[in-house]
Image (cartoon, rainbow, N blue to C red; front, side, top):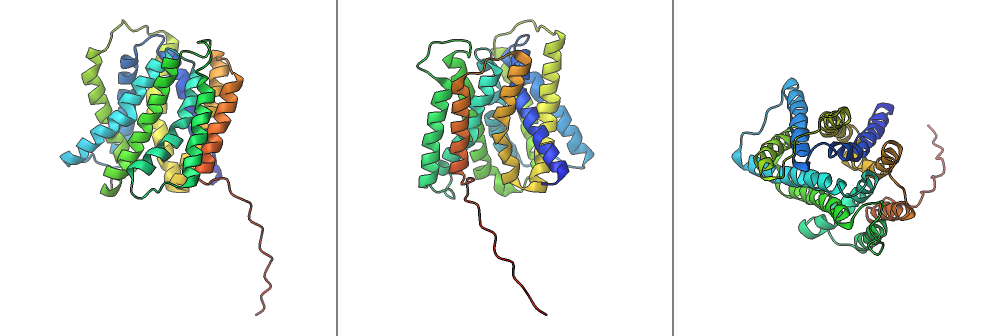
Length: 304
């Protein structure tokens, strides 16, 4: 990657890693449904403004909007609600660690649902090892303590499963329709805003506590975490490729833990560290990113 792309790569990891801290602060003054509604509306404003500025247009085919609605539920509405609810019951650092299971769950879901993905011994071994890592992180045999409750942690894992399902659905139903990434994400966040607005009245309501920390957190979640982050991600995909851009998932749990510990004083336990390392190692193994170094070829002497 170029120096600019490398800076964007680390910036994206910091943005997505800090999102869990901002969610934790925001749910101190908003219900999960209120938080998600404001977050997706702010993200929609940012992305739609950029789309209009660049001359892009929203899809006009009703069938495409139907698929977009499904991806909006799987990629935004459901996981955002699960994360907000889960972080009411567990720490931001723990949430960031558990979301690290998303790429492994995506790998497993793709193998099951897509004909182009074959089940190999490497994928199976990586998934089993990753599952062990998740169990170590959650430590279900221990009593409920300062790291939060098991229901909260399972809700975060549910969000990771939603992200995995969305990825598979997009690859199966939308990837062949030639929709530009910016158009796809803008339509998704618009659809998420409409859907979340429709269901919010059916959730518990409380008078928002709009103290400064809550307002700043929700604005950063919407404008930066849901708007700007997607623009950076698309830039990295364009410049460095999808595989390189997706490797940001290796840094997100690390930045999530660092920011949660630094800003919120979240506890850091041995099982979080060991479990995260196991999950990341399992993902790297399953994706065959752990390769033997290739010996350099001897220099060739040519004559003219």
